[in-house]
Structures are given as C-alpha cells and as structure tokens.
Length: 325
Image (cartoon, rainbow, N blue to C red):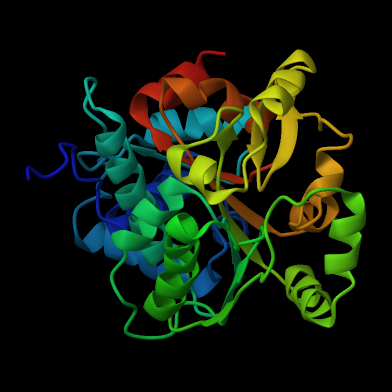
C-alpha cells in the first residue's frame, strides 16, 4: 500500500520560531503580549527569540522557513480575530485520505510545539481529522496535559466504537494525561432521555470536568456526516439533515449546529445532544478547530464567523479561500 501523498508540514518548533520572530521584530508586539496570544510563558518567548537568531531565522529580516505560510496565517488571524492560524501544505490534487493525513500531521506538530503540561483538554469524539492527528503524534517525554476529556458522547455502534476510544485513549497515553470518557451516546431519542442521562452521577462528574477545561481540540463538521459518524449511530437522520439545511445550517462542532454567520440552530435536535454546552465551550480559553477541503469551506467559515474557535488548523487552498472572503 502506498503512503499518502502530502508535503510534510514544517516542524512545529520551526513554525513557532518563525511566528514569534515576525510578531516581535516585524509587527512590534511586546513579548508579554506574544506570550498571552500564543498561550506560552514570556520566558519561552525570550528563549525562542534568542534561538531564532542562533539558527539564522532572524538576521536583518525574518526568513520564513519552507512550508511555513506566515503571511497567510497572519491574514487569517486579522480577518477573523483568531489567536492563531496554522496553514499546512497539501497537494492540489490530494484526495480525502491525503488531506486528512496532512491536516493530522500539521495539528500534531502544532500541539507538540505549544502544549506546556498543565492543560485540561477536551476533544471531539467522532472526528476523522482528530484521529489522523492522534495517529501522528509522538509520545511526550514529559507530561503534555493533565487530563483529556471527551466533549461529546462517545458511545456508539460496536463497529465504530473503537474510533471514539482510540481518539481519547491514545491521545491521553501520548500526553501522559488521565482520560475521561463520556459513557453515553452523542445523540439520544428525545430531551427526556437526555435529561435523565445528564442527571446521572457519572455524567455530573463529566460536567465538572467540562467546566475546568483550558483547551478544546475539535473537528469542524459539515451537515453531511462522515462515514465514521454515520456508522456510529450518532448522526442525524437524512430527513432531519434536510430540515437543518432548510434552516440555513452549514456545519457543526460537537453536534452543536450553526449557520453561515455562525449563529446556532436551536430546536428539538439540539435538545437530544449529550455534549458540552455551548456556553461552557465558549468559556474555554483555547479552542482549536481542525478541518480543511472544499467540502468543509462553508462549515469552517461559519465556525470562524461565529467565533466557535480561537485557533484554526487548515490546508493551504482552504486558507487562501477564507482569506479572500
């Protein structure tokens, strides 16, 4: 079997070195403000600036490393008010498997460069892109986070259950963190079933963990479910999806549906979801959305318009399309 074709993303540290150097030397941002924007310490900003000089990234100008799209990332950050944008190279003719591989590798490099060990991380349960990221992460030599918590019910059909378990279990092992599973489906029959499950002591404990999260790592879904989600039993029925489209829905994050302008689509379907509430999600300081491809463009734009994410990891073609909107 041939390996997926994609351009390997720049090493996460090289990308971070370049970003910090541009922010400080070209944009005149203070080290304290850089630290706050990138969720790292001011001492680390100082060390990165010194290293950028020692390796030749900073001379009299900032030299952008191959595979780093610093100017495009900055355009996205300014256009959509993002804390950070990460753009990865993908071949123009890449298929879906190759796109997932590239996005997963880019997201893995980003996390490896920015996690400090104290984060409490929430993660999507059924995202193929998140699984691609987990599969490409290298085990941390020191703890990368304290815990990893499912953001959406992770119980599904047996043939798909391993997907949800792999995302949480393997990410927790890679980071040296404690896993917290949501022992319930993501979608249930009605609001009464949802309320009953949420009142269970085990789900009350999960809710406590949701309230303490400092970071979320999430796929951005389109209304049409992925193959994995469709087989998991946690997707909306075709007739229900048709109704969502008639209401202007373009995408979802953790099954919370939104329109092109980022506004929520509420109603009976939303009342059947077992997932972190939108208010709790928005309280998380760093919310990383990972998605790309033409079929996700409207969903990604809606997520950015509604400020559902603070950091975006996407492919070059999608980033260019978003920057031109």
